[in-house]
Length: 172
Image (tube, rainbow, N blue to C red; front, side):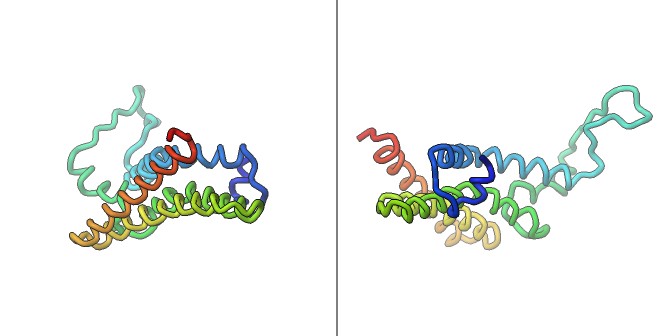
């Protein structure tokens, strides 16, 4: 089933495909937490969750404020001040579920020609704008980039709310 998600846009979209991709979109927050966890652990090789071979009791990890402030501030951020790997990975992890749905919507438009799928594609494309502006703001933390980021977040949230209420859930 995951292979079909990776091949999104190249295979006919079935219910299970877009259902699973929607679940991935709902889990973006957890993906970001996973990125933070991996970044934090890789930034602190001196931390171990396992007892050392000469210890009889489990290792107790105490994080001092200086440890967190000096090494982990870049984790969970789009800032490239400490390198490009984690911020780019964070951006890709945030955008990938929306990218899958974006391609699926294009494929559904190709298959049945309904313009509704293009509007749904627009909904998922606002996620790219939202996360891209968060990345940009981390590189250029100015008032104007903050305003652009807030505008992107508002547009994405408003479009998604409208689409979900009107088209997906048919509340009105």
